[in-house]
Image 1 (cartoon, one colour):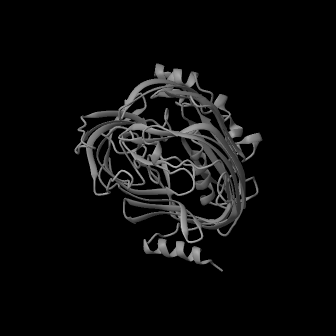
Image 2 (image 1 turned 90 degrees about the horizontal axis):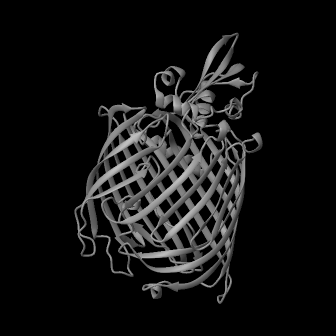
Length: 545
């Protein structure tokens, strides 16, 4: 029998008239054929010096890397939906500029699976000096995201901004020991001290995958900064360590999967004294140890997948999953703070993601989520967000896109979180972190235009935009009615050969309102990725809770 949550997902998508894709008949797989191409085809590279250099500096992805993603073997039943899913999984690896998987009839009810990939350029070395939202930043990095064709990533990054620095080394292996387990390791140091992150996951790899598990570790010596008008006015030193273990099993048909799991989290946080002009505004907790344990349930209804271009990339095919996902985690949280009584608190974590196509050439997404902790009848910690995105693609070579987001955060026990808005996270034209508070809303409207111009495989796009941001902070007397607007235009650069699905953007913005008695002129910013994407938004929010 279907659960109430499954009925909720079905009911929501039914309201939007979202038809499921017709199931295809199962055939027998005879053989798997894999072909791999370099960044540029031989004909392209022979006639172009730059393309030839790109191929010479790049190692073609090894056949076994592609073969590990194929879960079907000769003799297994296979459908067109299986081939489509494999194609999506290959694109999700972000190793390829293009990937296809299709079936070729072989007679007697058998088919061959033809897999073809074209690499994207994976070697990079970059350095830049930039000024974004009034913040000077020096960045240097070297990376190979497909190390010697093995599908693994190794990178070194260094950044300096506002007398703060970060040096880090990252290793990413999506096929650890020739398996579907994934390993991510990042270690480095800042002006405060060292940090390290480790993730070992076995994710749900296919729509019919029966299990997933993983472990996460994170540790750092760091400063938590608080801002006023873009300036740092308080800081609190923090030494933290956290460990998470989880495991889940999934069941149900491919288009409607139910996952049930157990989640355990442990953390220790030691705090230093608050420093700075605004230090009295922020309570510093005692050193804290916390343990969270509880189950979680996820209902994933994905009846349809579309291949779309010009949503967030320029010349790269994007996979859009239409449907709904609901995830609920219930946990007991034991919290022991030095100088305070130990507490056992219930915790609820809820998220909803919904993607629809209500009209032809129109996509809508809704993402909502929140976490609350309760002690008796008192709310001790909370965080919530709602994001609505819309895309309209009926105009020739244009995409009309909009994003409306609302975020709120607060805490009575741990450090008080602070939300910021500025040019560094989506309110273009205003300095980085110019606005700060406990609640914010942001509206971004864009007209994204594909010019059709192609220079050395780099596609050029244009964008006109209008941004509005609202921030509320009771401590500083700021109301949500105090909105700040800006407009501008920019360039977009995309290349499936060199950048894969990523887009580089250069924006010129003009603020329309004064901020805290200041007028700002025209600003120029450069970054990687859109200000908002199909389900994502640029954020500068401390993720610890």
